[in-house]
Length: 390
Ligand SMILES: [Fe+2]
Ligand SMILES: [Fe+2]
Image 1 (cartoon, helix red, strand yellow):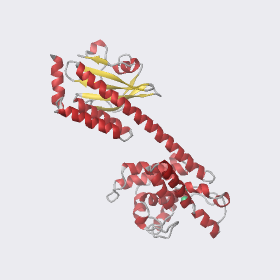
Image 2: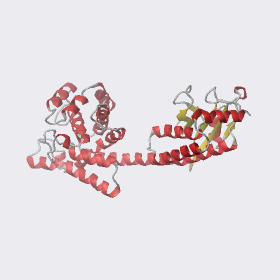
Image 3: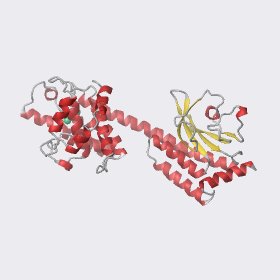
Image 4: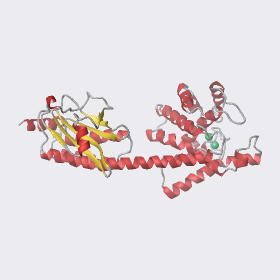
């Protein structure tokens, strides 16, 4: 029978039989779903997990892009000849993917014949099973299983595919909810940082630029030996936590924060306290709401961004490696952005003047290694300024 030939080919191609191996793969897949990190690469992981469990020839995950009314491919295995960002319109009547989504029903086509108007993802596909992924609020995508041999999926195979897609539906819903939560968390954090800086006259794009500059420098460090702590998570965290560096300014009176002239010694002492106020505020959040990496890095950058490499900074006079890396990164980005921006008391410096000034302070105010790496390529620094000019 054509179907048996297809099954055999699927099992042999992955070297996993339907028994213990498949059960172990399923267990591993479930465990992975539960503790999966939430980002775009999670989708690839899901697809790979399904492929390993089923040992099918090809499979692909599509999720709905609500803005365009299209199904967008988020990951695939076994379809080398289709573009990675394949989109299928929900109004495409020849697509079984669109049909499965619209009708919220599984579609199973054996021995695909191009003459009958059904369009598979690849010409190699002859048996196709498409299942809708349905969340609490309705269909959110479809999962495609393909067989290269002529034949169909038997009821046991279809049951297995349906079960995996059901599990995926829960996980995708979780990914969506966590994504939504983290977006609201970012919005609240950014709002808090804005609130602190809004009284300052240079609010403009400062926070946006600082976040991008810090991310850029962290990315450059990640490519260097000796910066093992700069992981993808570190880069992502600093790109958000950077906004919190001056959050403590919320506790500085207007008469000092907005004073146009030079601060007296007493006023400067109060101004310096924005580092401690910021750290205290974020520590309070950490105590009450949990130890999130963004908050703990926020504490580090708030308290440490005015520390100097030689120990003559504030508030604690920490030196060198005693200052957390995130704070050393912020120290450079903050000064670079402040110098290259207009202020009430000065015009913006040119990049050349700023680079010269910061290089001269390397080893005294700034981590000299980081300064070198920061200025290694300057086009990306200009691009940040262009993106957020004011
Ligand atoms: Fe500051
Ligand atoms: Fe700043």
